[in-house]
Image (cartoon, rainbow, N blue to C red; front, side, top):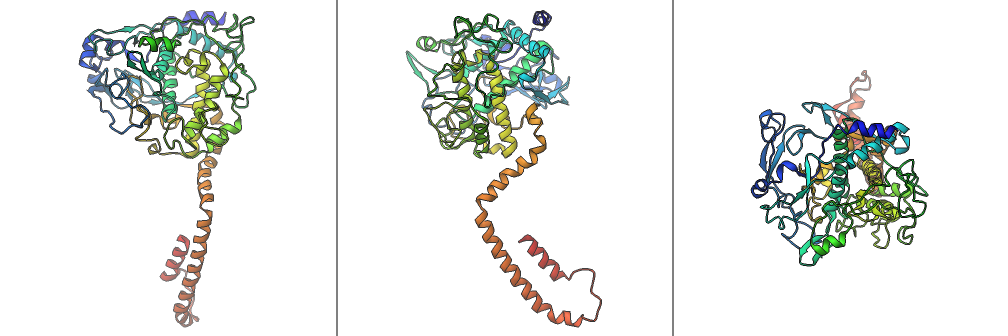
Length: 530
């Protein structure tokens, strides 16, 4: 009953955001390669009359890429978004959005000057009304057509280089499913040829920043859709879980009594239809997913390939990941060793940090464990568990950032796989965001995690821990330096004693001064420095 009431009340809000702005998909926009729509507040492009932004050329990074994708000019996502647009709104101050009509993450108010910090909470800490409201929001998003964005249903070439636009409406929830499909789809090379070793959001450095932005954009659109400015995505803490404890009808859906691959009829999501799951069909036709429903949500947790994923991640696995000091290493892909990103993503062992193609652990383990729609990369966002899972993965990323305090320069500037360099724009978002922009603390983006707030008192210990670890590694050098310093100090003290002996004898009968002699002062300073 509560859900029904909430659902009816929320139908009055009809807005969204995501990929191609509806205002920028005419043949004129595509032929001129410009996406600078007017802001509704003053009617000027990018809100220029109000000082919000202006229409400018896009500056692309020319940093070299890794060798994983050996082609140029064959995929619409290369040098994003230059295939479609080379001029977009460049917003000023705290303004953002495809028309500069929104505020940057962490800011609020009519002029985007108010700071705020929202808190993502454990789904098991939500009250019954809060949980029901979350489910109502999901359903509303699933049944509300985006008023601001559309999806392309053909490549730029199939659109005859923009002269014949091919776009389709889509609901808000499926818009983000489509985004996750598009960023990870195979490259269509023409004819029947494809290239599978390409992904702009996985298996490389941008995995964590890209999904951080994905969640923030999804969260932001639910806030706009519902008018609930304080909405945040709940997370599922799966550390040491022995089973899928959110896979019940009370939460994300139990199993069907006669078909274990489907959700229970009593589940809130049993009637949901999925999109973008027929990858081989798209590849064989050299076509894009067009958002057409393709069947029910599928999930059979625990009945997966246990030789590949023997268990769910443990708290010890998470702690090992957090102990890794390198964000990225080596080839910066799924073969990277001792890489925090690669280990958390699940391509390297959480026991050794060594890449292991035969195992799927950490983040990947949860996807494999669900044994259904979640287990296919491109279509995994169809399952709402995706949101809860990635919120917790993001919290681990946040813990690593707070523990190691990396400079932005730690994120690779060059030679990462295509789309993953620091200054590369994230596919397929408009407005534009760079990978490096999200290699910062979540607090700077306006959100935090409830369980990390509880540990803020230990932040100094976390901060100093990395320095103590470094000191431990160079202890022998420090000990040797200390011994040399002690010897030099003793030698200097002896010289000072000899040189000043005569002077002390003359002053023996005088009262001792309150201040040290200049030479003694410098000697003390020198010893202190040593």
